Length: 245
Image (cartoon, rainbow, N blue to C red; front, side, top):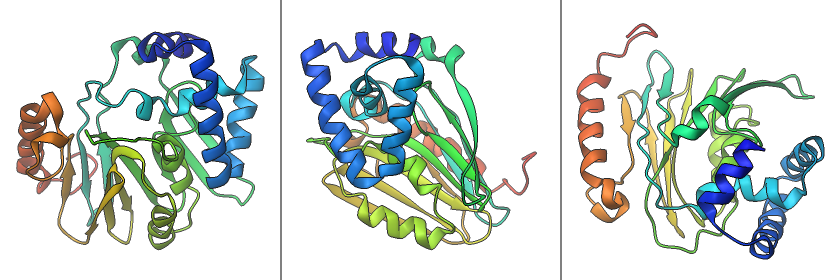
């Protein structure tokens, strides 16, 4: 209820518009992952709210594109370490939860997320992890919500299967997802609306913040901040050889 209240104010849409948007999001999620659509509707039932509200909550990143964000993600392939900070609305900090999930196939997942969202910053017993940075991109941002994609990637048994899944996710979002394996390297994928940029990661450490390459438009008003954080992360990433580092 707190999360819905915060985002209802932030998204600032009337009930009719929220219902229409939720219906559109629901159709996309069902087509991409019927399992996660069922989970979203189960969350709605458990919370005693209409399903369209939980679908909207899971699509808040697409609906609030351009909101300030300050996340920095780092992956060190050799020790198999992946992590990030989560810098978002202070109102949500007390609500953050870590969900521990055991699937019917025996795979175990852990995700740091917000109430009502099926995933965000995740890792699995298959040795995969995902991190998230927001970027700026031209619309329309009408794809499968990135939070649904993040959770779905963690259902995959290995890095190769996760990369194939990225191919089927389509576009329509403004986000960077860093995928790392404990054993096999990783890849970084950026969605800029309809455009996608994919970078394989082998041995060298990799960092990402809230812009792409040398394009200031992808960083919006936080371009200089994002560049400064990326420079700092790159200066430190080579020293990450252990969890303590």
